[in-house]
Image 1 (tube, rainbow over the protein chains, first blue to last red):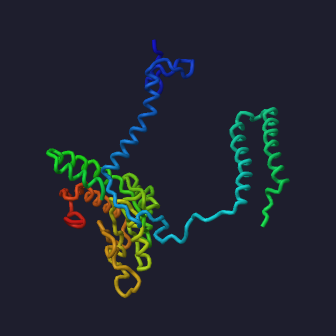
Image 2: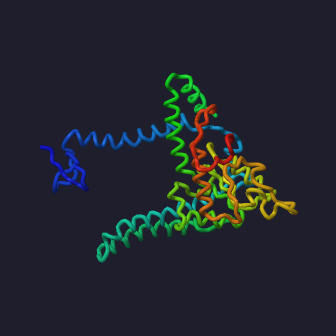
Image 3: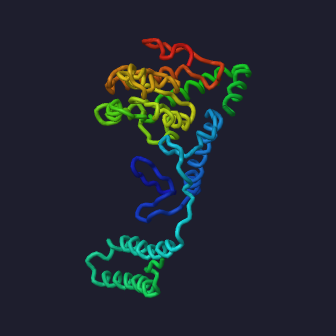
Amino acid sequence: MVPQVREGGAVLRGLTAPGKGVRVTSADSVWFVVGLAVGPVAFLLLLLGINAVLAPSRPSALKSSPYECGIPQAGSPWCPVNIRFSTVALLFVIFDAEAVLLFAVASRVRGSVVGAAEVAVFTGFLALGLFYAWKKGALKWQA
Amino acid sequence: MAGVDEFARALEDTPGGGVVLTSIDAISNWARGHSLWIMPMGTACCAMELIAASFSRFDFDRHGSIPRPDPRHTDVMVVAGTITKKMAPSVKLLWEQMPEPKWCVAMGNCAVSGGIFHHDTYSVIRGVDEFLPVDVYIAGCPPRPESLQDALLRLREKVRSESISPSRRRTVEGLLPLPGGEKR
């Protein structure tokens, strides 16, 4: 028999079994997932299709001009950027990865000495990379 | 206008297509009339009333009217304030950048006729209808948000009279004559 679980008033047939976590037990649940994937896409395509048929379209150069609060655009935003910024961007990734991963483990290692040591070692590794780049002169802005 | 014109004409030519056409009109006009997003063209003190209209005391969200800071998102330009001759090209450009269908509300005496600047001023446009197709005029210096609310509800009546077919226009029963009379 297909196990039935009542969750929030809805019966999920075959998707979950009591005490066993999520487990696929019938074709219904597969169709449920397929519907979840196909349904929203079909709905969006339907809306876009209706829009394509019914929306009035009067394109013009003025209409597609950039929105600058009604003032003509002063210059092109596609200007060259100094190549040295790329090094800064690469170094930023160190801090980025550090912040993201530290926040991820912070709740698990809370109050644990071993956890603090692990996090310190991880931070040390990242710091090693930063010091290497520093020693190589990546932080120096040569004119 | 692209595909929608041919679509409407094909429906008109098809026997029984008018039922489909009027049903589409009813649904799309209902949707358009109940989501009149505002391009807040506030240039003077009327803008304070326009801003107040969005907040909790008047809460225009319940009418589906929310202000958006981008002409590409919006349906109705509310010109709230004095438009000087120097400002007019910017207002015109913003109007051009709004996608169809679009409507315009002239809020306050300055936007309607130049207001207190109507006489003896060299710099002020005597009413935005000199360069914009205004649908609803609101008198007042400044008008209260209730007046703007009335204008949006009147505009909704006008939207209900429109059709995706260029050759069609229906009369709508309202308490007062529709703004702009028969033609737009």
